[in-house]
Length: 341
Image 1 (cartoon, rainbow, N blue to C red):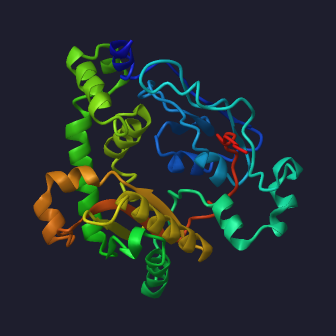
Image 2 (cartoon, rainbow, N blue to C red):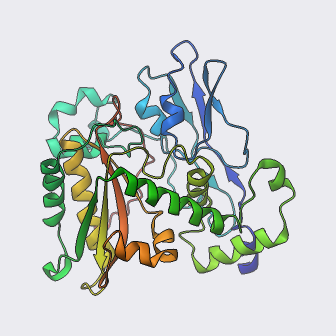
């Protein structure tokens, strides 16, 4: 049983969601293509379609394309389901359709607009916030960046140890260098596990299967096919850029000596920053893929980015003004809740 789970960790039996486009509503603007984190969409005959250059992976149900479509021309059918192996998830999701936010339980109206005015501003930001991948070139003023960092500074932390620090980068040449090093690092590592094309995938060597299988055992969180697929998109489509064209990048660092669950505290800090940014009309996308190149290029991390012990990289935030409307309510799967008492 254990060996079978390991074997099926490498691209396990998966049901992928289906993206449906209403052709009469679609104007072929391409926003859905540019925002897809997995690079699986392309414009074909004037409407979005699956990019078949690499046909193994599909939609992970993030609904980014739905959020940015100005004409509401895109919908999704089904959810991401792994049927067996190490990453099986068919047993952990409750039955039921995906729904919009239901803050008032069964009394919540179907349309968000019908109850939005009853929500607090914080609730509205939480429900509408999306990870944005469409940024304007306009730079974010330093005073606005400072406001966002202040929101992070006042996050909860164990023992009030505040185990975080920040590096704000608005130098485009340095951002480009970070992108380049990340792409090279990901290509060298993921190339050991994943082929470059659909044709190569059909003839993939045993070494790739073994590498990915062992990775799923040693690094279960990083070997999930969805994460690998997103990383693969970064180096196969470098014109998209790791930071998606955002003019500001904030590196969020953690003090590895912090009290208790340092990752939890630093994540709370990051979420405060995200919500503050969106409340100011800005857009964000948290990007963790830089942890790989920073380990391969320690001199670059120390001398150019100023990351020095006891601090180490936690996550990066792409920050900028959104290009068009990107924040929008989307549906999510029902919550997994156990009530006791």
